[in-house]
Length: 390
Image (cartoon, rainbow, N blue to C red; front, side, top):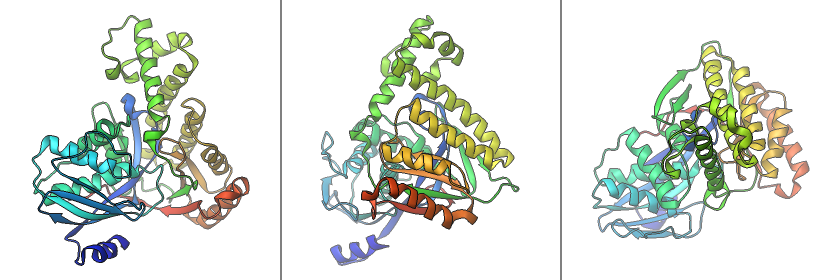
């Protein structure tokens, strides 16, 4: 790994250890975790690596192969608010871990991501990889649900992105050749094994060439619109409701939505429509996977992408173009844009026998529409993987 070489170059010694957290994909179950919906997901065999060593003086000193600026802070003096650089996620992780444990040791490290940034939950992956390292140098053993919660608080409460637990759960709980089926309301989950008669598949990632940052996108607005829909529906139905921030569409039965949806402002209705239809798609998708019906699961993933574009109303011009190209390319079972949909990438489940043809056809069609992204657009072939090793 290049980060090990960079660590040796900067610190004139070998790192004490390395930590790794995989990226994730969510073929069905997008934009619903913050509303306590259901999701299906897979960890992939690409992710974030950190080569590191302890610093007894409590200083955290990090550099990244993806960003120029080196970041530094003390474990007991994290800035109260985000600074606005790439390391905010890791300041947040330090802050969140320190709420539960007394930290004595800092670390120096070099971060390396093995894929372009955007759509594969790189923010959650770097937080979890860093938490694993910081906990280890401090002699702390984190449990799986514990690291999911701390990583969530780092991104939601410190950085200020209204995420749910989809990303963290996929990256921690996943198992190779299994589908994670998770209820984000109570964190109950099932790992559904790959059916022995399921057709072979690989995971293709089409990076649009444009990176994105959730903190600067319309992500939080979409979450607030979904909560507003829930709040209004509860009021129309005469249901008891409490604080706005604690309201979720999962609290509102679908029949209540169907009865009162026409009273909602159009944007709120669309966000709710996505939630309820995606909830049903996840249930159907889990059963399709259980049967080994990869084509059925893939169709539902395409439908999820359609709803994300037209009901959740996200997806850049680049990602919508990739999505349409994917739908019309032989050998692709299904797919959608990955993550929040504000730039980033698309993912697809594909027949490995078509991999080279898919890479060529999708790339040619996409760059014909966006020729300026030549050299920035990229194709990556991945496999399912285990979640982070704690």
